[in-house]
Image 1 (cartoon, helix red, strand yellow):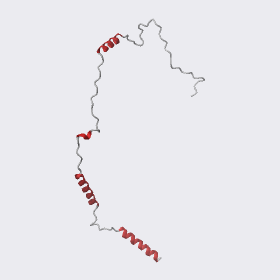
Image 2: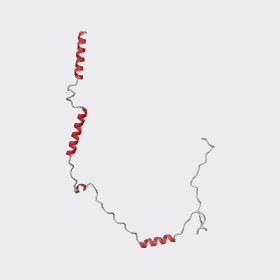
Image 3: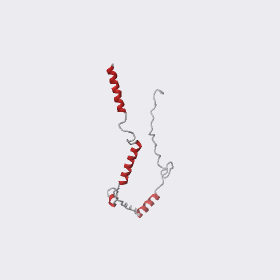
Image 4: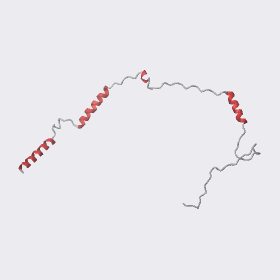
Amino acid sequence: MLSRTSSARQAVAAVARLARPQMRTFIAPTVSRRADFVQELYLKELKAYKPTPIKESDSIGQVATFNLPKTPKSPEEADLASSLKEYENMAVEVEGQEGADAAAPAAVVEDWLVEEEEEGGAHH
């Protein structure tokens, strides 16, 4: 029992030694001081950065050159005039009116929708 007690005391003492800080607090930098160090290092590197100068030839290969599109061909004026006359001379077709085809028999309109009748009544 005595050996268990002494080993327990030794274990507690070892844990207490590990829990104690190794350095004194007045020597160790604080968290805010470490942040300032990182900020100072960042600002120093930022001030030391020198970007490469931009040259006129840097855009070659990166940007397509602009070319004006080809001008469209204008249609023939004589062709337009003849097409317009042909359009004006065309007969107007209006559905439901009987014009020059009054003597011809009317075309039979077939019913394209054929419904099948149900046999034996409604089974719904």
